[in-house]
Image 1 (cartoon, rainbow, N blue to C red):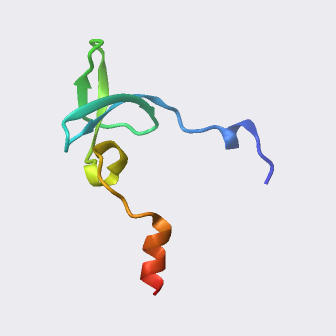
Image 2: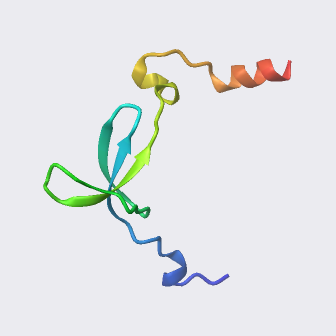
Length: 79
């Protein structure tokens, strides 16, 4: 396949607000996703808001929890 400028172009990105429902935190970031729901950010501008549900179990390094190394987990499963 021959690549042209149009085949390599990524989707149009724009600023959106990701709202973490678990922690009630908001993050302003670039994304190709959009939403019908909007919110007003600290700068006074209105942005689409995308609801996400992040769990602290997925971020053990930040919460101080202990995680089992992936290799140990796999070795135990195959034993």
